[in-house]
Amino acid sequence: EIVLTQSPGTLSLSPGERATLSCRASQSVTNNYFAWYQQKPGQAPRLLIYAVSSRATGVPDRFSGSGSGTDFTLTINTLEPEDFAVYYCQHYGDSPLYTFGQGTKLEIK
Amino acid sequence: QVQLQESGPGLVKPSETLSLTCAVSGGSISSDNWWSWVRQPPGKGLEWIGEIFHSGSTTYNPSLKSRVTISIDKSKNQLFLRLTSVTAADTAVYYCASNGHYSLLYWGQGALVTVSS
Image 1 (tube, rainbow over the protein chains, first blue to last red):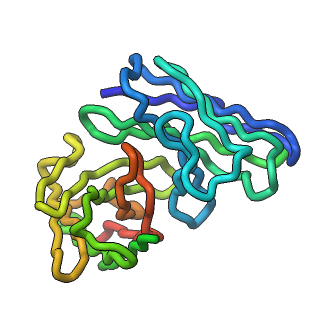
Image 2 (cartoon, chains in turn red, cyan; image 1 turned 90 degrees about the vertical axis):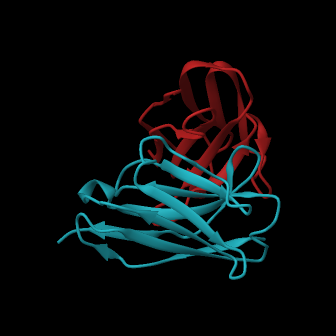
Image 3 (spheres, each protein chain N blue to C red; image 1 turned 30 degrees about the horizontal axis):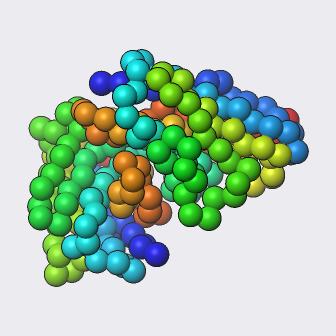
């Protein structure tokens, strides 16, 4: 089972700044089945990025994903007030099929 | 756009069975798609429970496999989650979701289930 570790646990930034969120896999990911989600308080997660770098429908282009091997990154350019939330990375693999990171909380500084 | 709505008892006693329903609208549960259940304990992260295809084929998280059953009713466009022998550790918000490209595309709003006597 691949374990995903997200860093930092909490990221404090101001609107207009760039956010870089990291997700490290415990072993090299051989497929590109890597996704990112945004979750706001009291809401369900929302798919942002799939297949490492593809934006889901309706996701603003300030969100981008990248990475390979064991290191994956979600970048949010020019933070908007509505971007402050918890972000989860996710890998699709063998067993269990879906594993999630523990989350990074992006908070307003 | 597919919409999902979870429903079921909000309180379950320890050792009993948790049962939830997910109603799918805006799309057919018989489409070429898998459907998942995911849970989130209060203040914690996400845990994938399992998935089902309209044929009835299922895949479960090994950590829950002995206690979980996911089923489907194509005539009602619904899927179901059954979790037996629950404990306080099963207290969580339970989500149903439609699978996308090796990701979870559409989510229900979630149903909080508390395990307590």
